[in-house]
Amino acid sequence: MLIRRRRSWEIPESAATPESAYLSRRGLLGAGVGLLGIGLGAGLAPFAEAAPEPGDPANDPTRDLYPARRNDAYTLDRPVTPEDISGNYNNFYEFGSDRSYYQIADVAARMPRRPWTVKIDGLVENPREVGIDDLIRAMPLEERLYRHRCVEAWSMAVPWTGFPLKDFVAWAKPMSGAKFVRFETFVKPDVALGQRRFIYPWPYIDSLTIEEATNELPLLVTGIYGKPAPNQFGAPLRLAVPWKYGFKSVKSIVRISFVAERPVGLWEQVQGREYGFWANVNPGVPHPRWSQATERDIGTGERRPTLIYNGYGEQVAGLYKGMTAEKLFM
Image (cartoon, rainbow, N blue to C red; front, side, top):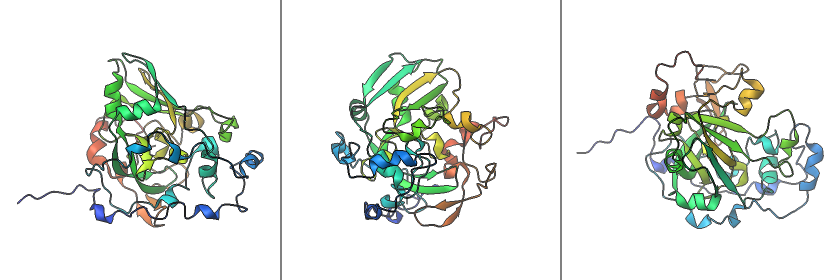
């Protein structure tokens, strides 16, 4: 008799909450919408009136690829967060600093998704710039159920669709001197009003080591909930690194560079004492201003114990053996 040993972070697919109530809460928008983050109140007015949404995922040229096949090796220990909740609770500082009251989702929808290109450069055999649709169609898509843990001690669980970063790395053909993969987001202050705030060193950048990038878990995400991702999730291309705090998962990527020296990410530049390069989830290492021992599940409202490496230690703990001198968990 075949006995399958379930990994620590798995549950049966039947325990995953189905998508059901998408857009049901969008009707609550209207007169109650307040300021778009600190210092952006004046910039919100142009978006208060009804307007076409160039970022509508229904118009995505790759929508025929969804839903993608689910990879059953990646399941969850908790329900999938309903889309109407996760889709309206987003940190995306390019569009403002207040993730609540639905502002981010509505304002992000005004950013056009096409044309969109991704520059691939640095220590690679063939530096190039590729259209996002060509890139997506060059990589077989799959769906994975992942936990997402924000450094602010909230969490969600979502069905990402995308392709493994390690497959992209192989496709890009980095040279032997490439030690890090650097990700850079867009700069469009005409629609991303948060980029008019000069306290942040735009563009948003962050990076992984080449060893982390070629691990099985990192996913270059193009969709969610069985369809192209809405803009507030980081469309048309974002990173999902489930064992790290969410600020490492760069959104709306326009450039991927293979480099020899370790880049300094945006949050590391702004406040390196609180947001370091590694940013691996660890309940035993608090943020300087709050505990990381527990997290609030935004789908259920439950307070859960935080898991080391967000529950993915079986896949990634070996990446950090012998690195006791590094601050791996901030």
